[in-house]
Image 1 (cartoon, one colour):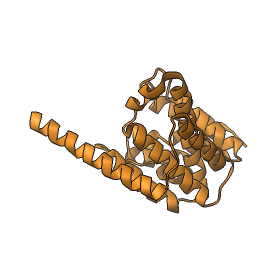
Image 2 (image 1 turned 30 degrees about the horizontal axis):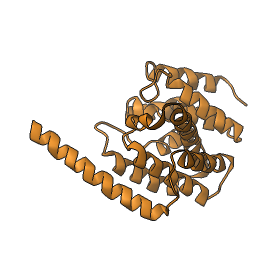
Image 3 (image 1 turned 135 degrees about the horizontal axis):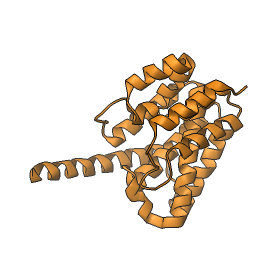
Image 4 (image 1 turned 135 degrees about the vertical axis):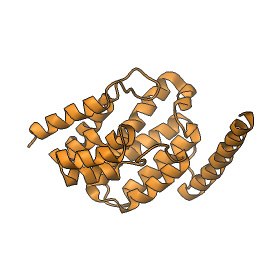
Length: 219
């Protein structure tokens, strides 16, 4: 049953994410949280999972560990555990992008089924949005992402493969379809995950260090 707790969670998410928008767009960030909660409910999730879906980015984007303690106090340990499992950064400054994503991939491997459902729903809505934006705006969209084109494609392919490795469900299957559709749209040929992951990580780290050195030299 859905009741007052879900309504409180919605108000909490709306307040904490007030003024935030999706990457370099005018779309309110709350729309993403609502979409993820909807996917979780449609996949059979209960009220706690829907609440976790609404709050899954609060810790990462709106205050770090104090927010997680607040969520645990207001919505319970089960919700807090799922939100924690969906978070790849707990403070500022955030670690370098590729490290955060590789660390999160390792965390997902050991996450429970409830956390994986909320996390996969988040990624499914992200990929569907990227695909729609790509069809509208083309290659220009990759400038919005820290991982650019290659990193973004690598990350969602790696996540999709991991979600489907253990206890696949409606959401993980839809994510696999969406990722494959995005790859086809951009003309990407499938490669082995291990090889593409290693190649991307090496390339991204090299470019990151070159940029860092250049910025330091200019100071």
